[in-house]
Image (cartoon, rainbow, N blue to C red; front, side, top):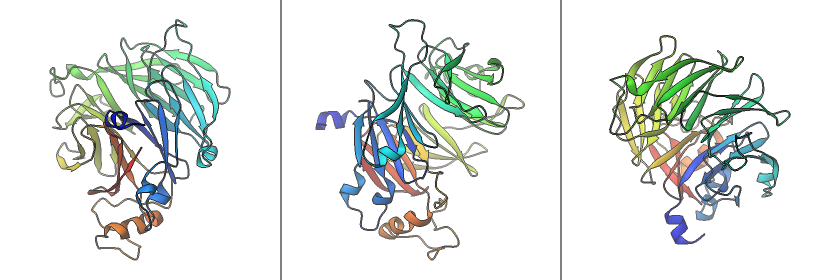
Length: 355
């Protein structure tokens, strides 16, 4: 890939392997890059270890969603989903295990797929995108078994409320819909932009990020990023972040968010912004936390976790890489750049991977 293509690259999605040793990232050129975290975090790591062990073209056009299952990496391109074996990707063998396409209204219609999520209760995959619908696929058979209809514009994001058996979706129409996974019916519809404390007409009404944690929901986009109590269906905290937020997550007693601008935002549940951490890309699309390996624990304060030989003092950069392979999580951030920032704690960027 030439310098012009690298200059205009955007990283849209990330996913860690089930073992936690590899990171997959997708871009606007239809490529997936696979990075070895154990190599990049080694004390002997050089620049070559921060490059992918494998890069391949998976789809024609941008890849907006990546998702890992127990054995496969799923990627969503224009109108189709592909599955790749993690075991084969680790061997640098990118061969699709299967490719599926939802049943669209027209064979000429190729809408983008913006997000997908697994429902562990029935081992199904929910897919949402440019045809305004959510398509449900049985992962055992590969058959699309139902379609959830209700949004009047593009669907941008999905989230599972697993304990209640509910699926949440956010779209360009400004609505967050809550679906009963058993019946396929929409049981609640929240128009976030109609709440005065959330509304930002200058940015529009679209919902670009959505995540849930038991009785709580985070959502934002055109409206301000806000925390909602799902039992009362009301906002409890509004976060004063500039620009549109594209992805947010709960982490311990913090909310982590990325969007327009080059900062990873740390917010308190009460609505205050605790800190803004600079990142390499000028605008951010995706943040991911490696929770797949029991070997890793993340430090919020910047100190090494208790129970390690280095507990209680700030590690140097080389020491951080050495210890991270043994006991620290990594958080990764990507956006409008060919670089993916790696955080060994939440307080500063350790180094960057690059396509």
